[in-house]
Image (cartoon, rainbow, N blue to C red; front, top):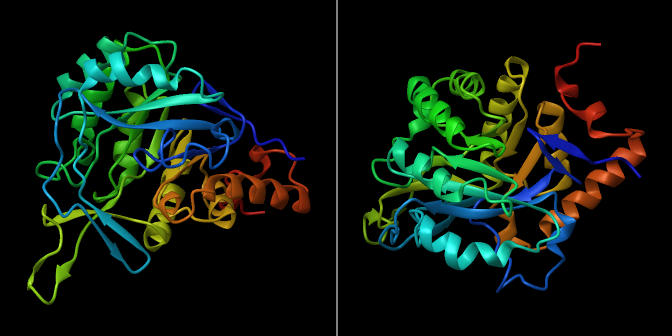
Length: 304
């Protein structure tokens, strides 16, 4: 059996697969679907510094090849999360990654200080790029903003720090490099792409927020290019996030240069998607003679 272990910026994973933020219910709907200890990590839905209700409805709509969401990161706030919800993640049998969001840099810094390197958290992902909150203009659209936020966050925590980048920019390499230079341990490429849908019967936008973020298989080729472009210029790992539905998608992303994978939209279609991807990846590597993921990673960049 192939070795699927990865080191994601200091967080050791038994395999590279974890859910994207807000795409898997560990305790209620999916509590008994499969043991989450099979995953390389679990990802906690983005927690905001302050309580927030999210966007007005409708919040989600299906499109060909995926879905558009404008949920708007509803959250109880970091204090209530630490007191009431974090204890539920104390015995998951795998790494626990917490996604954090905020409206301004100090929100991220304050949340990290409140967490105070909590040992129940294995790593933190900073969601700098949600396209359906506020103006939809993410912090990660500008390298200077990324530098300010990531360097400040780095001073607030010793936990592995992952930066979730926006695809809605001219060149993702600039913000990825700014993240690396400012102390990030990995970057997530990427968040959802800004999108909208119109109800032709009403002649109005379907979503209450007008626009949202599209995810699902439709965006995989777009995001694959971003991972492929960023991989050669970075010295920190890439977490690929965008349209992963099958083990073949996982293989593609790893060949493009990704170290880890976030599965999102597909979890709503098939709650067993992640263990299927892990098994399929393992079988592919065994059949092709790959002993570990290092041998597979970046294969698409090789010229021999």
